[in-house]
Image (cartoon, rainbow, N blue to C red; front, side):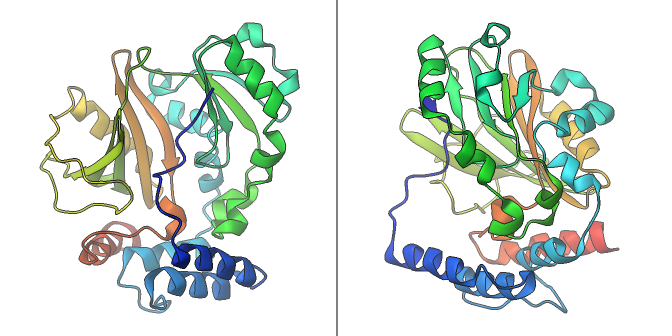
Length: 301
């Protein structure tokens, strides 16, 4: 049974270990104090709370001040399906087999394999189920307690998750058997797509690249996976993907709309309001300022 990829295999540096210890120590602080010091520990500077000029600063302010009740619906991987259907129809919704909190209650006869099982309120956790042996392994591990205890409203003070009921979802595994699907992440400000981060899986690992809405490669990346060396062809359904991202992000301020382009059609992976918990880093650093200008233009005006 394969675990859903939780991120790149980075060397656990002394700095990162010290950061995690520091975050645990400051976790008792109120939200603003906690976010101020966590931001400093990551970026080496304090956020400007009064006059933000960086995307990362706007993200911190959003977590403290923006209380749009719709946010809690769209970050829930189960409840977001209703929002997606209302906006763009159900053909882009990944079929759901089961939602609940106790895997012992699943009627596995109703689950068509391959499938994916994961928490509805967290990322970086889950399993691919390709055969009956995978189901057996899953039921031996019984990851419910660990998964359901994750709380992003505390980990990174992401307010939207404070009103999300922790659950587990089992979905259809999209794509052809053995197919490595790219993840197209549309960064959108109230219906205005500004760039697309593409995560491209290869046999030796995951790679990233960034493209404009006109499908021109940008000299920027998120500093998470290695840069993909080659240029990617424009997806055959790219215009439809753009329209889906625009429709789903309209009215959400900023949102990252994750899409998959398969032989069966386009599917929405998830809607993310706080990429990397609001602590996303960019190379070059100047891109943090550029995204803030989009926020000024499309969100705060």
